[in-house]
Amino acid sequence: MLTKRVLQAVDGSIRHWLRDAVMPLELDHGIFFTHRPSGVFSAQRCALCQLFVLKQDHCHCCPLFRVEGVWCTSLGSTYTCFITFPSLAPAKAMVAKLVEARIYVEQIKGENYHVYRKL
Image (cartoon, rainbow, N blue to C red; front, side, top):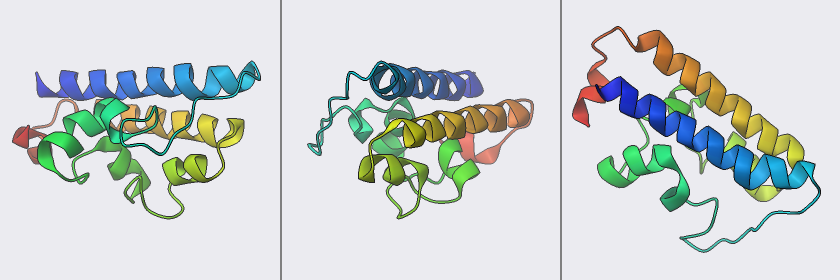
């Protein structure tokens, strides 16, 4: 089922952000941060980007885009706030936004949502 794949991607993204951003910052270990295309916080490491951006070449179907209303790379997005100022508050905000995206997917789960049929 397609919605199951989307939920798995959202859950994978939540785990990624908790493991690679929130937990190290809470423990005051710092984070591994790089602007390289294969860096920890790049599209290649995001389960949602792998499902939507890298396969379809756009974010329009991504549940994070749906709840935030802007692309992750847009100025003022939760992701851009973290990339600009990599600290605990923006990392937690990113996890909260991903939880919102998960709730969004759960709400449309029973519907034949046309956007997800493209996958």
